Length: 426
Image (tube, rainbow, N blue to C red; front, side, top):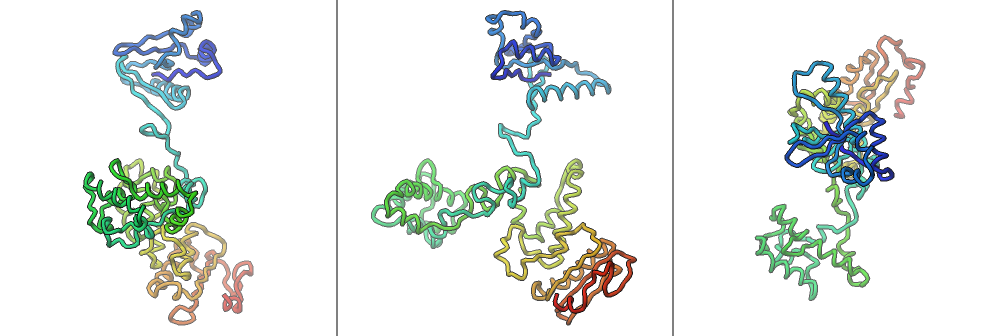
C-alpha cells in the first residue's frame, strides 16, 4: 500500500525524510520496470551523503510504503488495520494512493471528485441554483441570454439555402467571398448547399456556424469583423446583427458547466427543467435507482413529487420549470402559495385567492380548491377551516387554518381573526 513521495518546495530531501520518520513511516519504495521494486529504510537514506542520496531521491514513481498485506480471510482487526492504513495513505498523498500487487501491477485510487483527469466541483445545493452566484453561469450570470450575434438576424429566412443567400451578411462586392469559399469547399464534407437551412441536420447547421478544417463558418466571419472594428463600416455591420442570444457557454440552462456534469437517469437538471411538468412527474415516477441511491434520494424525491403534483393539481402541468416568468400572463405568475410552504405548520395561516377564476383556468379553480383542502388535511389543521364564495364562479375563496380544538369565533385564536370589513377589502 503506497502513497506518492512528494518533496515540498522549501525542503531538501533529508528534511522531508526526517519529517516522514517523525510521522511514523519507516520505508521508501522505489519501483522497477517489470519486476519487484526496491524497498529502502528511511534511516539508511538519512545516513547517505548528499551525492549518494541524490541518486536515489527524488526518483520518478518513488512512494512511501504505508503498509504491506497478504491476501487471506481478514478478521475484524485486519479490516480495522486496512481502513486505518487507507485513510493514512489518502491523507499523506493528498487524495491519492496506490496498491501494488506482487510487485508487477499498480492500481491507482483517488478520493477526489474527479474522472479522466478532470477535477469536478463537489455537488452542493447552491451549485444547482442560477439565483446563487456560486451556481450561476459566469458568462450570462444566470440570465441564459447574452448580447451577441442574433441567429434570426443573420439568417432571416430559413427557407432559403446557403447557395440562395440565406446568410444575410455574406452579400456585397467583398463579403460575398465568404459565401463563395463555403460553396466551393462544401463538397469536401458533403454539405448540401442547395438544401434550405431549416431542413439542415444539427451537425450541418453547426458546420455552417462554426466551420471546420475545410471551410470557415459564420463565427469565423464575425471574428474577422471584430478584428476590424477600428473601421466605421465594420462597426455598422456588426451592429446590424447584434441582439439578445442564447448564452454560448451554458446553452440557455443558466447554470455553470459543473452543475450540468451531474446526471441522473442520463439527464442533467437543465434538461429536466425543459420537460413539461406533467411529463416530468411521469419521468420521476418511472425513475430507476440502485438501492443505495434510493436511500440517498428518498427524501428529496418525496419533495419533488409533492411539488410537481401541486403544480398539476392547479392546472399548470403544461408549463416547464425553465419557463421565464415574463412569458406568462401576469395573473398566472403567482403560482400557488401552498407549494412554497408544503411542510410548515404555523399557528395560523391564511390563504386568500382573490378572484381565482381569473388567475386560473376554470378547471384549475376546482383543482386549487381540492388542493388547499388536501393541504389542510395533511397538516391536521382542518377543524377550523371556513369557506366563503361570493358566487359560483369563485369571486373570492377564503381558507383559515388553526390548530384543532382551539375555540371558534370571529376573532379566533389570540384575537387575530379578520373583521368582515377586512375580508371585504381582501
